[in-house]
Image: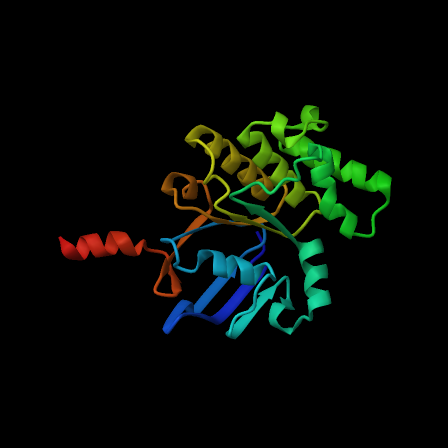
Length: 238
């Protein structure tokens, strides 16, 4: 893998207000991710995991600090440029599959491709390739209601991958799945990183899923650490 980071975040700060309470999920956070790396992010609810993914994916902006993705300073982009960045450079996979129920698997995968300057034949090729990679080439004409939960998430991954993005952001992609199906989904993400050179950022609460990644980072008081702070707290208590 290249040593030049595809994601380089420096001193990110993000603050929210809930009534009179100030919540700061990111408090001087730094992050570097190499191209082709499969990175797992762990931490309790509200620790800043989704906030960080939204900033890296161009869905949100930090209050202060910088975030470069593929050399682009996300904070300097206008809304039109951010839309173009998300459409071409980032694929999103969520806990809920977010498939359109009246569209087939192939039609769902085709949706983000319609935002790109591609011919109809080229889009069909991209859809077929993406569904084949996730093992659903024979389910392309099925509606979401005709698919299992694991198959729906595979379609969602194919949709994220179909545009050939540099970065795939997966926010709790196995959260609504049983353990075995979740392992299969992580295996698909693993293949996208190892065989297709995609950079994968995955948020998970499941340590066994995180261990499939190249590296695990933990949220600790608004920053990232290589050590699980819960384990450290238990050790200090002992």
